[in-house]
Image (cartoon, rainbow, N blue to C red):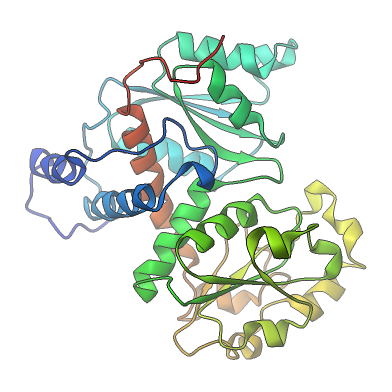
Amino acid sequence: MTTHSIYPHESVQEQENRLLQIRNKRDLSCFDVVSIDDLTRKDIDLILEIAEEMKQSGTKKLGLLKGATIVNAFYENSTRTKTSFEMAGKHLGADTINISGSSSSTKKGESYQDTTMTLSAYGAQVIIIRSEYSGLPQQLKKHVSSAIINAGDGWHEHPSQALLDVKTMIDHHGTLEGKIITMVGDIMHSRVFGSVARIIKKMGGTLRIACPLTFVPENVETVFNVEIFTDIEKALQGADVVYALRVQEERGSGGFIPSLREYSKTFGITKERLELANKNAILMHPGPVIRDIDMHSALVTLDDKARILDQVENGMAIRGTLQWLLGKRYDGKVKPYQTI
């Protein structure tokens, strides 16, 4: 998944054997990943371990999913998530098929359930779904034998993003136990927050949020055990990870703030604000970054704390790992909760 392998002289078969050995007698406890809540701590540890090996395999094409069919059903626009799922699937030898929101079935009024059941009937091992509707993947997984991966549903969750984020944090800090993660920005409309909040809790970290009160979801403090700050300087003091989120105007969030300019003055990440965090802190963003609004433009690629491109690279490894683990989880057998 990366351009450089730490095993440059290994054959493809040797690299595949190494991955198979890691997975030997270990599997996910779930048939689908539509929420971080589907995953146990052991599941997360397995995903992170395999993802690191996937990452170190470099650009060599593997055959771990040879003969498998992966469908990317993206009913909502995406660049990073869609591309990384597709490239990761191809890297592992799968046949990947893309379905968009402009597909014939949706234009003709077919339900998402019937479309997904059709794709599953074609023999797809994994169906990856992105939609503006919160809860859609959770509903669809009950009706198909294919494994379902949630690639983002409305304001709800984005589990593969949270997994790649945690990998990025652990790559730098070694552990999240006792670490402070400060998320800054549009919390209310962010499905990334929905998954990151869940996984940080599982991994033993402390989560802070810094945003206007209009961006604070109801009961978020008690549900996710987070600390709420309206003063960004206080929220950044002592943070080990600074995680910026963009204002999601396409979801109507522009009406929750006076203006982007005003928001940027109060909550935008500047070099001076970043220096309030711990010396060993890192800067993250799920993308796309709105430069000079979410954070100062120079911080995106020039600052040594930025890990945004590391997140992108880890996304390939994490998403390939999920497709491999779930695609081979039951090989088309009926799920315990499957209904028609």
